[in-house]
Image (cartoon, rainbow, N blue to C red):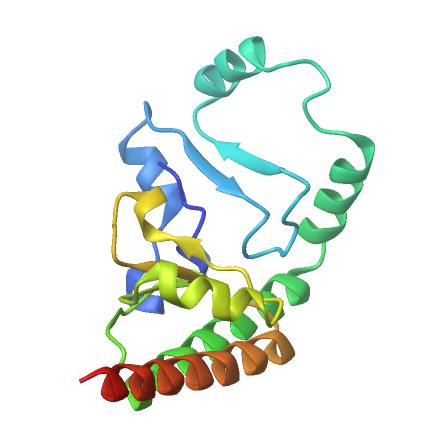
Length: 181
């Protein structure tokens, strides 16, 4: 079970992992630390499961799969619950602000419980305009949802830039479309 985005979900969607593993001893729960612990790029995470399953995973793990920097960052992150709480709160707040902006712009999106929002805009139209502002978004076609764009939620200053860029891009596209009719 991959819980990469679980920390960003509202409280009613949170799982009791200990109870889940007790009921299902053949389940392994994976948790990347790149999302809620803000350790993207280090490619570190944890696996939780029965001792037998964890030992089986260890036996096939590549040697030296985590470097010293990743290990030190993991130890620091796991020992600082305030950092995780701040990271989660920041994403939840900025995700809500992004969704409010999308509502105001009349742009369709899928309400999210993750650290990203899927926005129903033509990626080919919006991505270049955002890239000119230093903002990169992911084409939904790469994820199996053509016609949508994945927007990752980040720190407040970046998200303010993104909301402004979306506003300008959507309004510019509306004026261009209106002028063509």
